[in-house]
Image (cartoon, rainbow, N blue to C red; front, side, top):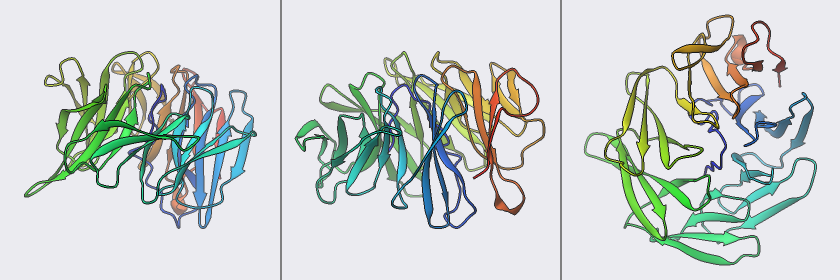
Length: 313
């Protein structure tokens, strides 16, 4: 389950930490304003939520169970966590929590803080349930869909990703749910695809791993979905900031428009996760070091030298 409401998709494709490895940042997402960064930090038998503020202050909260996933932020500054089959947790750092209880056997897809979206048990309908337990039908779906979803910044559109097995390979179908109808807008030659909505336009950024170890990426303009912009020569997924600028990362740093935005200072052999803040001013990066450790570093873009924050769980 994933949600993207003006939030950069962070670490979706690169966070590959094992449950039995030392404690490390597993995944992270910036608040839409870019003021705070939410991270799930895990290790053997533990899972914590860390929230880093603009001035370096840190909020930490132990989570009661493994298996929670970070969905993202709501527009009200709440953090959404997926509990898997059973419910969605919505919390304010240092403040109150609420839960959306899902029907038995339902699998949550996305959440905007007021409603959680999920598939009916027969996969025929996309449904939504609110904090009071009221359920509504969002849209009928094509037969056989089982998917995950990403919510648009306007909260009125959803993208469903459906994995399809062919004779010799897997592919992914990208479906747009809008005004009570579902329409397939793209097919990607991979079993897994990360989806990011453009912050201002009806466009999608699709990232997917390729068989040669590189990454494929394409921009799908929903007004003309049959003419995607295909990006080539990528060693990592691509991200948009709040202005729609594209960023990518490699072993040396983060790049945008062919120019280095931030360099690490040394080549990185195994990048674990990275994320540029919505305003493009800060970048979080984590790479694997000796002993399977993966500390995370927060850099101020344009300031060479040491990171401004080192997160060493």
